[in-house]
Length: 82
Length: 348
Picture 1 (spheres, each protein chain N blue to C red):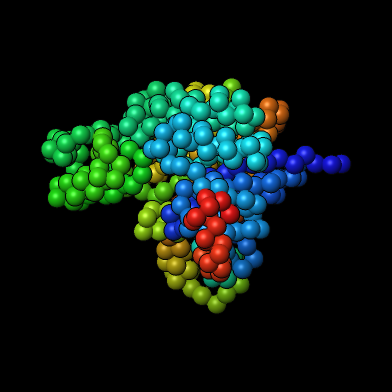
Picture 2: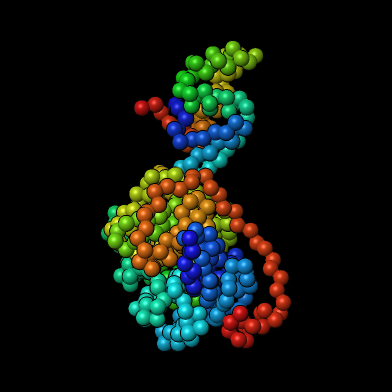
């Protein structure tokens, strides 16, 4: 999954979907993951960046990551790669 | 360079919880860089808030309701025009629109310019004709039927499950969850606005709107789509945000191009859970949230003035996405003598 091209996110983690006017706030780690996705990074890249940077375990990261992506999907912020 | 100054008459000064577009139209006109204005308010009631906003409205006159007949309306307009020399008139209510469309030639003879849809355009998008309108222009519209008797609700409900939408031919729409509710709304609305009543398939989803402007030759001069963020109990937008949605722009262009729409219009739409837009209403006038379009970069009331005067204009090709409007209420304090003027003399 990738973040839709038109989605914008501010430095403070304020997400705006211009297609439907919905807005969301994400915490700093959510903000970091969205920005990595916007840079075109895949899940494996994001996992290694986060695991290098923060004290957490792989399984814990994977669970939270899938929850987060699922939520982004529900809110129509992501799409499949073509 | 000296700017021309136009005397512009505007209705819809009822900036209430069911707001008319007059006050935001005037704000937009005042922001024109190309002309100055003297604003004449036309009011139907003495407590329309715009009457008392002296910073926006230079002079207000009572005018008769459309039900008073064309002759009475014309007599009053001639009287007012003999004092004010009105250049342009922008009517803003659904219920008055047909009268003023019919009076357009006579108004022009008096030197008053308008930019309104034709009678055919006005009629074909009417709530009672909307389903056919959708078929003609290839746009999804919820199935609807005009009914003249409460019994017809039962037939409709056999084909479409509750809830159903029960709508008046001019104003008001309610969601009915059973036959008893549908009957109640049928009688409430028909007592106010007459028959037919429109019974419509209910589409679950979020509400979107588009404000747009057609030049009468099939060109879309302006268009701004909006998603409602706060909706009042009366179904009115109290906050909204401009959005970027290609499907809405294409649909608007299709309608304006196909019908050669002349003047401003508002599309009301529902986006279903399958991400399909259903057109639920076409209003043949400026909506009350017009000032959001101005804030997003498209001064639609200004284009009405220019097109009414026959000035060639370039269509707007962009607007700012993510602009919000947040409506608020404000208590205006006025002396009883101000109210007395409009209530007894018919002008203020």
